[in-house]
Amino acid sequence: MLDTGVLVLNRVYQPVHVTSVRRAFTLLYQGVAKAIDEQFQLFDFDSWAALAAAEHDSIGTVGRRIRIPRVIVLMAYEHLPRTRVRFSRFNIYARDDNTCQYCGRKFRRSELNLDHVIPRSRGGSTSWENVVCSCIRCNLRKGGRTPEEAGMRLLHAPGRPRWTPMFRSATRRAFYREWRPFLSLADAAYWNAELLD
Image: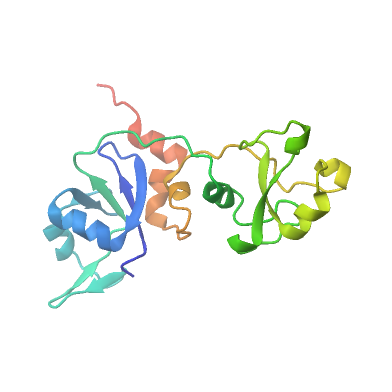
């Protein structure tokens, strides 16, 4: 339970990261962050610990049970998150969800490799738009040909993924309903629109 995900927002309610419950409690206790509930009320550590934890996920301490916050807001951090996803093997696997883009089967990362859709021998680049995950069998079948020449189809056209806190934490697959208002573009626009007199 202590290693499950907590969405971290900057001071202007934009998602910047997903952290562990353990780290979230540390930030709350230190006063660096506040927990936010379903009614979008902010709580420091003491007021959060005083909330009833009966119907929510909670952790036990010596004297009580404390409800797990699923969203916290950093009190002093207002920087915008970096919005560019680094081109790396790990991020290509995350983008393609460890799935061969030719046969559609999911594999362990050790059983996958990267394939250039347009082979490098034909001028294909090593870029988001030309590299996909493939299983060894499909990679050997395709060889130095294009997918069309090999009689194969791509599941999805490769491209640069959009940055989100969930992409940054690609190893965590859990998504909590409390996160939805901060990850949806429509809901985020509601929270970040400038209010007029």
